[in-house]
Length: 78
Image (tube, rainbow, N blue to C red; front, side):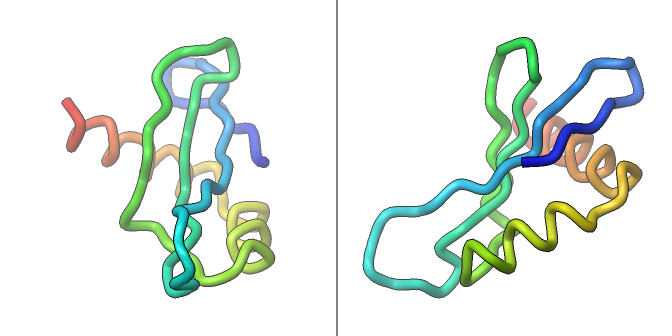
């Protein structure tokens, strides 16, 4: 789990979610949600094969990268 602030000052939480099934390839993906509650943004194009790799990548991403991915995902969804 990783917290970051968007351009408007809202705090978001970056997490990993697991896709059900036996196939491990791309089984984990990124999700972003407002810390205070609200709609979860699923980034199914940001995928990892293991939970360890997903957590490590999320922990080392810069806030700039997290905000960029959030903007992109919200724009695609809206």
